[in-house]
Image 1 (cartoon, rainbow over the protein chains, first blue to last red):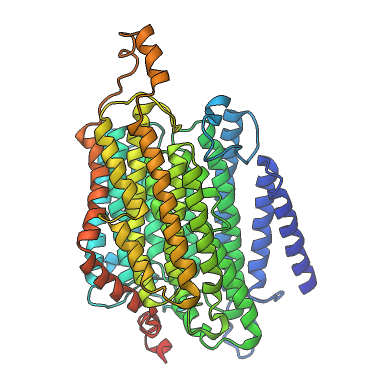
Image 2: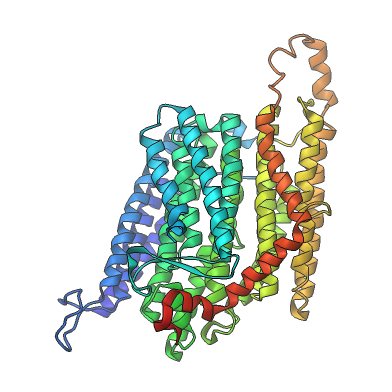
Length: 120
Length: 516
């Protein structure tokens, strides 16, 4: 169980980082989505792994429970990452339509004069 | 006591109202946004006056007992930061309305209010997960503001900005996961309490979490090696937005001061000295990058952006010492650099709107050349740290506590050389923009070919009083920070002493149960 969760977090993170480094809009969006899945699973495990247990304290002595707080955190994280992904998709789409390419990096950014104007 | 949540609640209620009800009426939206921000200034001044007695106020949301519920904590530092935010916001809002930036795209004022909500929340929260949530609120608003007005370059830079910050948010969550797994709490006061006797076997994990958090805050604060997003973002953002973003880097610095100064701060055995060991060299490299960037920039906005990077380096050198004296100096420099950066961006907007070209190249002088030159001179000496304005005092204060033999050579020389390079860079930019502005090769043929046609397409509108007020206001604040340096530093000293008085903070938040 621990091995499964740990390796899935690792694989998801590795794939996410790899896709993030592709620097094209679509792979980057997918990469960030994979990273957010990885972090959600990771947050679950931060409350210790427990299967088939209720997320509430039982009044009966000794009854096991799973920590409810990470679940609340994950829920928040899911909502936020969902919203962020939606914004990212829209901005990526707008940037693609405006610029005609889906590259995430901007060449000659910052200090380069005239470069932006030259490509207009 | 409910006033504590007002800086979050007021923009949160106002923003959807502006967004939904006033979306077709820019005048109404301006008035509402302006009234809301002015109220915010009043509320935050009230909050600041409440904290003058040295008390720490706690606002429990839903009245849950603190380690379990979410709390807002108001002490001198958070009150000061909220006041700084609201004053800056009012100035920036005036500029955006006076120059018409707010009508170049939709929903400027709604996004602006959401941004204020996020920033105020991040300063007030006493819970690390809630800090993440408010970070996301301010970020999602800043995404909208960053690409306000659209355009190829801006959308490209905006996409990059979003991707970097989303990656940062993921790291933030990883850090919080590790922190919760090892300490079982995310409440800052409870965390500080538990960090004091963390078991040895968990110390390594906690150090990882502390470093991850440091990286996240460093992304916000534009600290080396994650400063690279700032010049591209600030230089391509609308100028009023860039001026407002001057507070965004300070959110990162504040989070480092707050979290790494208390929970992972000095005297905590598990993480002792770790934050300082990484922060100090990174801040020095940041100063170097800022200075070289200022020297090498070929457009005005990147030049200002790099000077912001350099100022963050100076600020974080002071923070890295993690002593009350150094934090006092850092806070003074924080106040100064926020307004200095805002002054430069607002002024640059006025100048560039009249020059027609962003490049630092020789062009015929535009209207009000002398006035703009004088203002640029004032703002530049403020940013570079020359005597009359508060930048000089700020850097002097930073030198004071950094007399440690291991620090003095690196800190003093990097700040001094960085200042020199910044002065040279600004002098070069200023002389190209204003002094040598009658370019002979550009001016001569035009007068020959089209003597009367020249006045017809050009001759941009003069900047009216309304457009100049925000720039003058920021410069006046810089001057008054210098004039009233004594009282300000007295207040900041009390602020940083309160910050490092952990038991007081823990007691105030957790009450009797956690105090022992």
